[in-house]
Amino acid sequence: MSTMKRVPTVLAAVAFMGLGCATVSQEKLTSTEATARAAEEGGAREHPKASFHLELAEEQLAAAKKLIDGNNREVAQAERYLERAKADAELALAYAHTAEARAKAQAAWAEVDGLQKGTP
Image 1 (tube, helix red, strand yellow):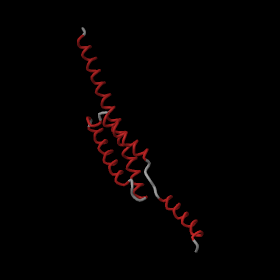
Image 2: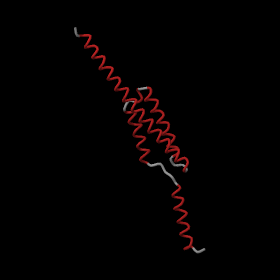
Image 3: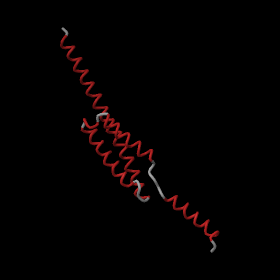
Image 4: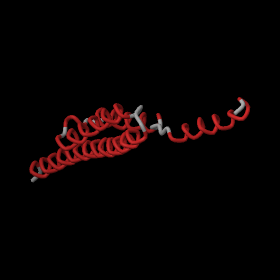
């Protein structure tokens, strides 16, 4: 077979191999990392439930990073880890915000109670 006849075959094989290579989007990775960072900065480490979910998110993020450059099956697993990590980070942030709001509400109720007891 001449070289000219092989070119389309080689190009087709290269294109086919390119289709089989899955990658995790940098946007998904960055978004997940940002959500975890927001949870940490939002005080998640200070509240037990929030801290637990933040730790889960960090573990899943680390696991995803190990698999990102792997084969298709590993990349698919990395995608799932990133999805779970993002969900846990969002949950950690929600728990932290809820705990902060609850603390503020309790302080307000204590102030109201003090004012009521202080008046005749």
